Length: 318
Length: 260
Image (tube, rainbow over all chains, first blue to last red; front, top):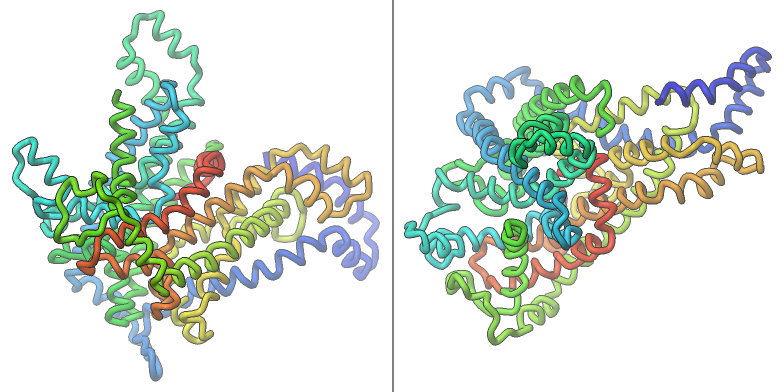
């Protein structure tokens, strides 16, 4: 698509080149043609350099320094990087983040798909329910976490414990139990994000041609069978896309750990970003925090590259 | 049936939040069904609005949200147009640099930005949360995609009539790409209003907290649960209203980009 546009507008450009007017004239005509571009793009690029490029490069330099807030910083080579491999809490935080992803990704995708199927089935008030399922996506973590704190409070007064009591389950500790806290945080994220995976799946479902289902119906396939044989495989690009974005999102998880558990109990909910935050802004060790941020970047980069490789060619979705 | 059950489960937390905001109760004294309304009172809200900090937090959130929203819409429109339709030296290079930079997680930039803003004297100033958010790459990408679909003939016809670049943009591209630009605005609103991580780091003075950090500072404090929920409700209302009126743009835009 891009190529076509390029050819169309380049035709007059070629003409100008043949005549080759003096340089000043050419600059003038370029300015006349593209003044808007330069007026907008120059400040934007300066802004881009200051707030994206310089911090990105500076952060990398930081990983080789012993940065001091007061006084001069010294070059320490790879010391900060080697610290990473001896730091048990750092490794635990990376592991926690991976565990969190495992708890969170598949349920979010499954719930999103179920919600999309429900909405697609065209029951009354579709628009209303679409809104209801999407509402948590636009709500701040602080608001949701505030409610979650009570729903999952580890005493008998907590709402979830109250519901469990009807099934004869003993009150659970939830956020104060190191084997359950991460699950509760994953639950919060599932609740908050599945509305957006629903939208992706909904878009995917609409692109499946109706006559495929009709053909299956004529062949006597049940609803369940036509889902497994037609819908599910045809959604493959959406599965992949949703998988990538939920994975990237899950590695950046911070808000719920900060709000609900503070990384505890016993570091069981300390995620990469949460640990980065404590190292950087509680311990004020900026250099080591920069190393951790590069670990995060490396993970996300690999995931994004897989995505690019897969989506680079033909997907109109991205 | 499943639909109503799921719908109810999704709404219940919000219902509990709103109902408990009318209750005066502390966290420790809660019972599982305390939120069922009887004897509601507005005291929690009265308490909040008499509290100077709370009003200030809301005001701060408004400041750091409104300016980026309009600025991001403006720049996404113009830059989207430039990258979709203008020919200039380095266009592809600049655009693909932008697309590559999207992969950098914002958490990576936070430490160097903190050091930088300390030198600028931007810690505890609105600039630290406004200036970096004046435009967003994702919005440019979204609007560019949309504008590439606008027929070139319209553009050419306007130029025949003697319109210059900015007029073509103003009269043709901006109105036609309005859905995409509105999507950028709604996204900018949600991401700035809800942001916790950045203000948590750049704002150390209680007076400069936005509502997210302000509310977070009251959580976990064994405080009055009713007041907490009243605060959550108040901070939720603007997002809810924006969502109610612009729902279409959220759901369309999310297919084009990726709000997490």
